[in-house]
Every structure is written in C-alpha cells, then in structure tokens.
Amino acid sequence: VRARVMEVEESPGVNYDDIGGLAEQMNEVRETVELPLESPEMFDDVGIQPPSGVLLHGPPGTGKTMLAKAVANQTDATFIKMAGSELVHKFIGEGAKLVRDLFEVAREHEPAVIFIDEIDAIASKRTDSKTSGDAEVQRTMMQLLSEMDGFEERGEIRIIAATNRFDMLDRAILRPGRFDRLIEVPKPDAEGREKIFAIHTQDMNLADDVDFGDLAANATDASGADIKAVCTEAGMFAIRDDRTEVRMADFDEAWTKIEAEDEESDEVTK
Ligand code: ATP
Image 1 (tube, protein in one colour):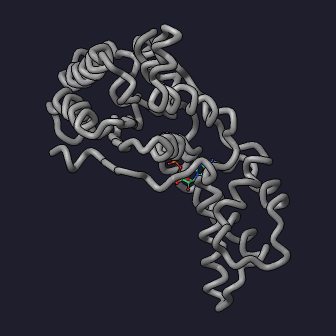
Image 2 (image 1 turned 45 degrees about the vertical axis):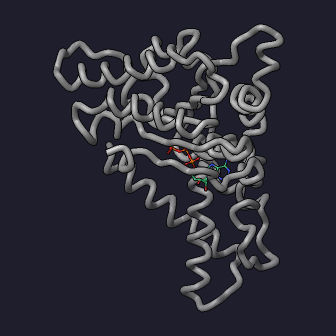
C-alpha cells in the first residue's frame, strides 16, 4: 500500500536555480527547513526549537512542490511526498495508518523532508455533518498532529505541507508546535515571469526575436506551471511548422491556445 501512495526520492533533481522569482520564499524555506537540518546545534546553542512544520500556501502551479524538493536536494535529504487527498480517499479507513507509515519511512531515511500536498484534504474546517467519512478524515489529521508532537529530535525530519485552499483550513493545525510557519507562494510578478520564461527555455533553440520581457508582459496572471506549458506548446508549433527554431509568434500562438484551454477547464469545474 505504502509504495503506491508515497513518492520517495533520494535526491530530487531540483535546484534553487530552477525556481524563478520567490526569492523571499526561498530564504524563508532555507531558514526554517534547511538550517535546522544542516546545523541543528545552532538551535540547541541558542536554546530555541526550530519551527515544527512549514505551510506553503498559494495558487496551483506556483512552485510549492519545487521549493520542497529543492530544499531536500540541497540538504541531501530524502524527499517523501504524499497527497492529503490520497491519504483519505485512496484506501478508505487506512488514513491514520498511512500517516504512521509515512513517519516510519522518514525515520528509516533520515535526514528526510516530508511533503504533504493538499493538506486541506485532511485539515479542512469541520463541517457539521457527522458522517463516517468526516470521522476518518479527522482521525487521519489527529494522527499527523500526534506524530508531529511526538518528535523528540526533530532536526533530522522536517515537514512541509502545501495547500491552495488556505481559507478552508482548520486553524487548529496552525497552532504553535504544528504548522507554525506560514509562507505564501503567490503567482509570479512580471519580473518573476521573465525569469521563469528564461528557465524553461534554457534548452530551447530560440530565434532572435524572442523577448522574455515581452513574453512576461503578455502572460499576466500566468503561474509558473502555465509558463512551462506555454514554452512546450511553442516548441510544438515550431515542430508542426517543420522548424527547429522557436519564434516569438510560436509563443504568441501557444499562449492563445493555453488561455483558451484554461477557460474551457474553468467552465468544466464551475
Ligand atoms: P500544486 O498546488 O498544483 O501542487 P505547486 O505550487 O506545487 O502546484 P509545482 O508542482 O512546484 O507547483 O510546479 C509545477 C511545475 O510548474 C514545475 O514542475 C515547474 O516546471 C513549473 N513551475 C512552477 N512554478 C515555477 C517557478 N516559480 N519557477 C520555475 N518553474 C515553475
């Protein structure tokens, strides 16, 4: 069961350089996750506990997973990922056990970074209904909190959670000793978008007319994931046209196509 819901990577191939924008967020993650892993004695000497858990929140596709992977990579920690939705929906009744397994795997692989994506799936504000599904979700969350409380030597295992539904979270998980460090990961501004375009076109054969500043200016409201998709799609337009060089016009067409697809999927989810 474990293997099917947990993603374990010894060294996830993501570096801080692969992340565009988010300088401030990167610093915070380094201070709260990397520093305690690399120099736990500093915290001992000063006599404080590093934050227990860090919560990254912001829209989808903005680099939350990348940040968690980069910090694991940087510290040579094993990256262990699990999605909140899988904890409760994949194997009904197994949520609490999966959480125990998750921490067991982390202890076997120390130092480790545990990344829990979609934490809202197990930590939403309580609804009034007393259905068995809710009870299961609650048991899963209680298990997570008790694992976090039970850490004696927290230095070797760090926990990062992520959500794009911060408003839905049960505030109980944000109490001191739990996810007590909040880091907002927003969509990139124009400068961030420019950097992300540069990152995702690194290996592309670009025509001289391609201008990252113009691309970034056009891609208002795009997430990092959207920008990556636009770059790939632009490459596809060049291939369809039997060219190896990707032009500005390909990016424009790609952007139009991806925007149209986004609107369609918005309508489906509405
Ligand atoms: P979700 O909430 O949907 O899980 P996320 O915030 O965890 O999303 P990631 O999985 O980190 O997003 O990003 C998805 C992909 O988008 C990355 O693999 C990367 O290619 C690209 N991407 C997102 N943000 C950035 C960024 N800031 N810099 C470079 N690439 C990015």
